Amino acid sequence: KILDNKVALVTGAGSGIGLAIAKLYAKEGAKVVVSDINEEHGKSAVAEIKSAGGEATFVKADTSNPEQVEALIKATVEAYGRLDIACNNAGIGGEQATTGDYSIDSWKKVLNVNLDGVFYGCKYELNQMEKNGGGVIVNIASIHGTVAAPLSSAYTTSKHAVVGLTKNIGVEYGQKNIRCNAVGPAYIETPLLESASGDMKEALTAKHPMGRLGKSEEVAELVLFLSSEKSSFMTGGYYLVDGGYTAI
Ligand code: NAD
Image (cartoon, rainbow, N blue to C red; front, side):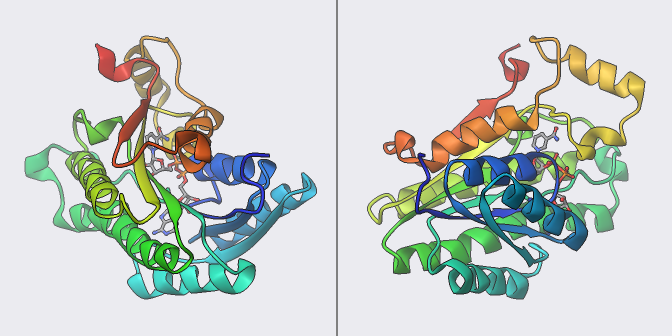
């Protein structure tokens, strides 16, 4: 298995893309810390991983709170002794409005989770990875790390910023045996999209040249590759998994 003996952390792992990543990491032999703000979902993810023969533990944390993120990394090391792989996945969509009407509260909330939360994760993960001699970080951005999402300025801004943060880390830690890459999924069938109406889903689907939305498992495969030694010369990059969305 390609992640045998590795210790991996996934934020927002109670649902959707994060859950698929945590399950795949565990299937590939990693000991996984499943973290989420939602305790019920996080615990059920751990139960699912264990019943499939994997090793996992739940640690509750709100990624937009730096103290909780610092405590999360500490709890990971207490549970499994080190940190080799971290996937900063927790994120939210936020309000839908044109930029002039975008509420300041929603702007702050989205940036706080999608950008500040990823920075807090990276900060404490990097410090721990330096202590244990190396590691790999994968940040979940979006296609909206490179193209607009009309009516979601805060989301587009946060995801572009995650791509920038990822580049900086790639450059700063290139010689410290720590790699950091970002992933850009297009629209994926997850609970995040459940609130969308049938018409909106159809319109979204039509934007993908492959004629369908993506699956969480398809994102997880790319994340696994970037988390493993198979991507040993890749850092500071941003990789799409988008059914052709950004190619048009
Ligand atoms: P989801 O809503 O299914 O899951 C997100 C998980 O993150 C939930 O379990 C939620 O409880 C948790 N979470 C939310 N805020 C948190 C916080 N402050 N601290 C800790 N956990 C928190 O969403 P998803 O679709 O699986 O999205 C996961 C990531 O993928 C997000 O960063 C999202 O922006 C990104 N993404 C999603 C899509 C898509 O179409 N679904 C496309 C591109 C990128």
